[in-house]
Length: 104
Image (cartoon, rainbow, N blue to C red; front, side):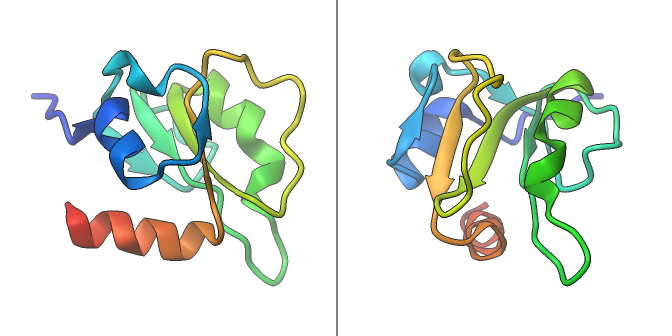
């Protein structure tokens, strides 16, 4: 059974700085931080650690089923992300994940 967590429209009310088709009511069924996971209808949240930066793997996340992205504002957005993909800009992706979890 697949459960709907929320939609991109709902995300756009929380993270108001975005580009792409965030108003399209695209359904988000799960949240992922690991781009290697093949999960359809997911929100990809790239985290930054001492040895890695998840922003480098956004293309992989999209090819594995991500339909929306949280993106840290101080990171350059690659030009090859399709224009229609809802991309929500936040100051800190970890804090945004925590905020999202608290609201959910």
